[in-house]
Amino acid sequence: MHPWKRCAWLGVLMLASSALATIEDDLRTVLPFGPRVTGSAPNEQARTYFEAQFRALGYTTRREVFTYPRFDDLGSDVGVGAESLAGRALQGSTGGEVTARIVRIPGAGTPEDFKAVNVRGQVAVVQRGQISFVQKANNALAAGAAGLIVVNNEATALQGQLGERVALPALTVPSTADAALRGGQQVTLGVRVRDGEVRGVNVVAFKSGVTRPDILFGGHMDSVALAPGANDNLSGSVAVVDIARRVANTPLAARSYFVLFDGEEDGLRGSRVFVKDNPAVIGSLKAMFNFDMIGVNATPLNVTGEGRLVQLAQQAAQISGSPRQEGGSDQVPFAQAGIPTLFFHRGLDANYHQPGDTLADPRLIRATVDAALKTAEAALLNS
Image 1 (tube, helix red, strand yellow):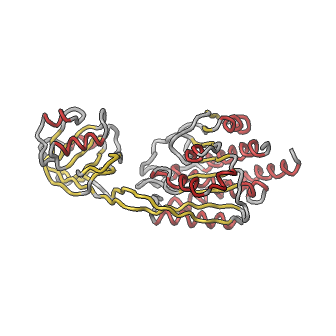
Image 2 (cartoon, one colour; image 1 turned 90 degrees about the vertical axis):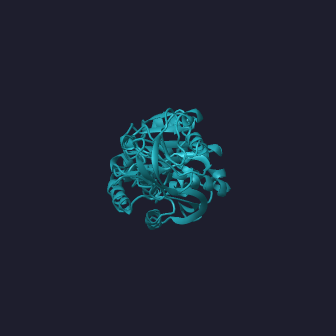
Image 3 (cartoon, one colour; image 1 turned 90 degrees about the horizontal axis):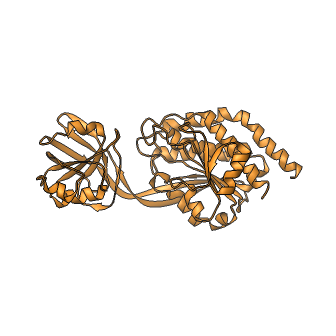
């Protein structure tokens, strides 16, 4: 190992002691913007803030703009007398408002279950489970129902997917709403949706002249509707920016890209676009580190991914890991392109995709950054 390399890396790791306050500033600034849904004003506010952080550190930034179709729930509910029960539209259903009586469907909502009752022109209520949402919806439509309510088996209103267009207003409600949906009672089903194009924007940061990086540090900046997204995934975004801060004046900066992906919650849209549109970068990468949900210790810090990187993380940073590919975050398109990946995460916390996602611990984020830098040192100094 060359002495200059060891000195540079020691400088990177020594900066850790001053990083905590900066992480706190990031969280304190961005979280009040609100849910960072792709295409929203809070999403753009967060992007502008993070761009400014990168530039203040001497990085060049660029935006990658892309569009994709998206189904949005604009606030669906079920009116029961003077009460409004919050619901979530099933993706692929038709918007509309229906006032009719409830018919409770026995069983899972199979064709035979619908034949057991007369639901024509009425609002069908069926329990989640056993068969898919689209089967329940198509069976309700075939039976002549004017609308469909699927009662979730948990105390949340899940935004499920039909997977195809069904000409029926349909939504889910939490299990806690079940008792209010009595057979024969008149309700007003309001499914308010928008189906159209959304504009996503990735932020890419790098030192001027760097076109073929060895490593990419990434995390998604967007969150889901109604969730402030402190842990999912402001924690990961802040980790990426903090790594950029801590290596800004070291040789590692000239070997790295830092990317805040958009549209992850809509199907890894931003990372898929990046992999597709940046063949030179993809061709040069020796590793991609992804950070998602690292601000709450639902489980201890864990890594999954390419076997060699997992082993290096275990040895260099003393964290647990498994050589497998997780399928739900932005490392996936890179792994599919043949890039060794490492996914840093702390498990699904109780407020995952919920309005209560308002907490992220700066100490946990810093510990994750420490582990990532130690692992990157081990991976790149021997490459």
